[in-house]
Length: 136
Image 1 (cartoon, helix red, strand yellow):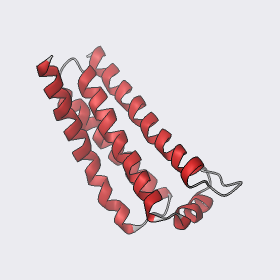
Image 2: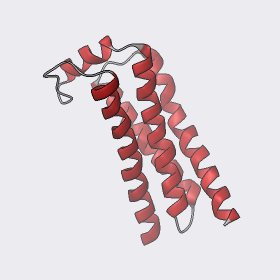
Image 3: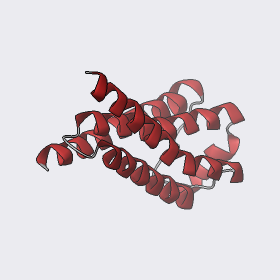
Image 4: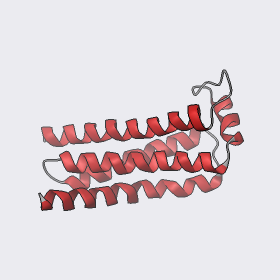
């Protein structure tokens, strides 16, 4: 049980690090936020998101799905037992985070299509990790 808890925490940390790394790269290098914009201010973030081109929003989608996939993979790979369950917990927590994010920042309607894909990404990662565990 301790190892499964560690696997879940590690999956969350690695997944969130991937997500935030891509988001920070997107918002500081590729599509920088205007000077003085605070990520903590919803009004400023709404204005920033509204100004972004489609490609920037697609990068954000990749970051979110990457969180579910990489986090699910890490959790499933490290797990002592029930690797698919741990991967799906990561996917569900990523989904919850996505819903909370969508409630705080105005995103395009089509952005909601990605949310169920968090579960698909985590499931796929779990399947891959299980396959690797069987092979080794």
